Length: 370
Image 1 (spheres, rainbow, N blue to C red):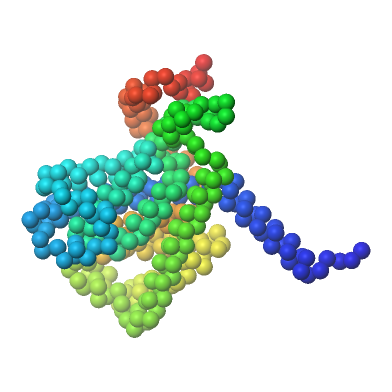
Image 2: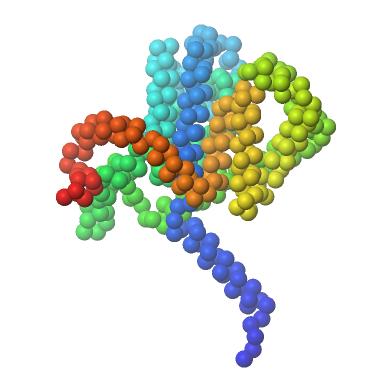
């Protein structure tokens, strides 16, 4: 019997890889814990930007924003921006508060598919009234939120997940419920599309978000490598001398007055950004890279007064954390917060059960009790 040729073995290997990739892509949703945490932290970032700038809202809209007209006219996000162009001051105030409330609903995971796009459009429409309101995390926040709209971000730690657990999915298709069943499943956050489609879309967008993050880290690292100050180990010293980057002057001065700390941190920032993508290959190096990235962004938040940029990056970095780590964290946090959670649900469940469309929906808990 003749031995298989090298070409045949190569084709078998390629076919095996393809089968594994197809199975990975379509059989299940990946990193759903990370996507859920990304939803929470990204929503908190939107809320934080709007709440911390609430006192200067009169500079964003109305007569006080005339100075900012050249920047407004140069905005590339004109469709969302025109939403607020015709508003009066009072209307804009209520709109501003409404976007904050919608962001809160997104954080809580209440009908995430519906409130997510509303939050993103509202956030962009307000920020584009005064582009200087944003920071370095504004672009990644918008890109990341847009991608999250196509992912399953309410599988955990959300009101949607609790609603799914308390209701049954209505059968859809031939011989089953029609359009009414579809609407009821949508309201209760159950699946209405084929599983292979929803899994595939989630995983493809997950890959796109991961690729976006890896490009950001690598390009930022390469940009630093070309800088003379970065190669000298002094690059971090100069921006930290600006008053705008000193939320805690004592901490910043203590950091910059020790030369070896500045030099070490400067080189560490370059190494972390350059090697972040490569370190994701192995589980051990991935944990080290994620920890270093977390410390890197927390340092930026504390020393450079960019908390919402840091929170946005931490939010999307969560997709790289393994599911096993999230499961351990979930068990630990549930044990710690169980008394508070039980009290919260005891108060809210009777209210939710009285909402329209819920009176005739028996909960799974009640069914199991019967």
